[in-house]
Image 1 (cartoon, rainbow, N blue to C red):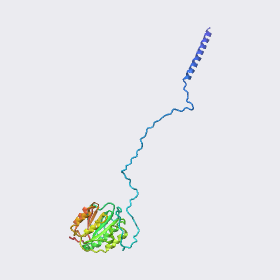
Image 2 (cartoon, rainbow, N blue to C red; image 1 turned 30 degrees about the vertical axis):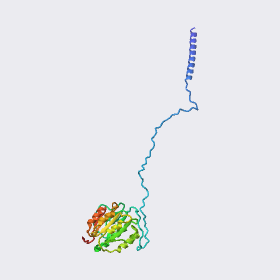
Image 3 (tube, helix red, strand yellow; image 1 turned 60 degrees about the horizontal axis):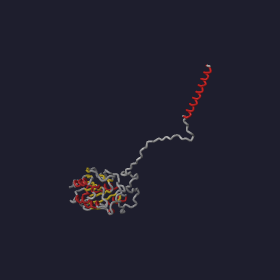
Image 4 (tube, rainbow, N blue to C red; image 1 turned 90 degrees about the vertical axis):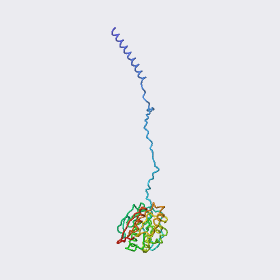
Length: 306
């Protein structure tokens, strides 16, 4: 009896176990998560990147970039002038070919010797030439030189003309120049009738030949010479003014101011007291008023004329 009871209990326990496991298997089956199919796509993931600020290009329309190409300053030639030295020139200079630079600034030639000078500068920037050691900078150069009777003493005339020719020869061929000699009146060559001359080889040679024909005589009256130069179509940048005596025209300074009133701020007048110190006060005044340099250049055995 006891054994049968235990058998019944074991069968009951086995039956209950089977029922329990079946129920448990069904429960697990209902809770199972199905795997994604072959056609299912994984969930998309959106990643938001931080937006960068837009690039801003700043253009300053008030700033001009320099032109990389060189600025033309006029024709430069190395060809020899085919014209004979005795031929007259009808070649005049253009209105304004640009600033130039030439050798010889500060040099002294022609026997002028050492001298003393005062001043604050000479002409516009760019370069130029020199006359008895006084440098001039600009584009157009005028030379107003005394050939009065006193210039015949102590070889003054020869020394002044020699230095004048050297100064002109130092100019490059795209510079412009004009020469007026004076005594009781002004003297200038016929080939200057049309205005400024290009500093070509031919014009330099013609000017040199003409200068060699001049002789000293007369008084010291430069007003008419300045009148010629300052009434040219284009005003000069630099004037070199040389005299060896006191100026005899009492209205000279007044007339000079009237002639330069429209462009005095752009003009430089360098003055050279040559051999004699007579008239040095007026020369110094002109140099100060027109931003130039005054220099006294003695010659050997120079007289102190009054």
